[in-house]
Image (cartoon, rainbow, N blue to C red; front, top):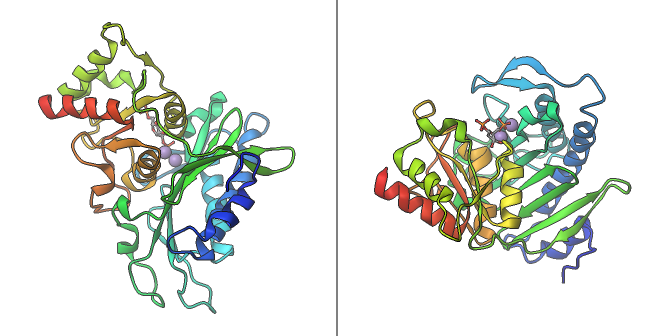
Length: 335
Ligand code: AHG
Ligand code: MN
Ligand code: MN
């Protein structure tokens, strides 16, 4: 029985047997992620103190400047997962192609692949605002004993076996699901342990927060424009409150606790939206659904979309069920 003061380590051991594939491998994998997250957390917390802020000079495959901490977080997660030899492949928002992992003695026997956004919301680092990490885990579909291939990564979100995020906020939290609800753990930095602080997290069915970058308003499709106006109308229940941090992880986390909707729609400038299906939308969609929320591209369930490339983008509407359904109604009726 999970208890509030339980550590993440205890929770993982206790819940290992209830996981449908019941293998220690997934537990080890989550363990590695919590470890890497601690190391990244330490570095993020120092960001204001050391000269680590600013573009590292590289540009990622999407043509965006990489901040130094993006590079650092990417390296830490990849190193941790590679050294412990518990996954067969990794795909990262910060890498052009997926990475095959195999030590000489294990001959491609690991079952899981990880997809990761090592640092989400990185433009917020140099202004001391919350950032995050997002991860998504699948079982490989190609046979054991062979190197991983692209099909192992291009799976529908509904095939995820686990997903989670870390929010490096006023406190650091790891929130994850293995398909049996969503639990949140808060890091006690003095001791270095995560404690179960938010058992069985649930999106309220309704909410009064909407989160969208309204600077793009003029470029949004008509349905989204009308939905935003609907959010602003005064009818007793509305207007809703507008809250937009610009870190998906933080905006999502707040909305899950308080009730709300997050949108990154398509626009004339970004006809496919901005967020990445595999590193951002699918894991957040899995968590949302496990927490009684909903995630859609306006028309389709996010987790039903068949991915065609590693870095593809998709419009994203996610949050409290009734709010997402209302937004979908506007998209359906107006495009
Ligand atoms: P990343 O830092 O991994 O590139 O992701 C940033 C994402 C997401 O976290 C955030 O919600 C969104 O981009 C913000 O985009 P805008 O600045 O265009 O609103
Ligand atoms: Mn991101
Ligand atoms: Mn990122």
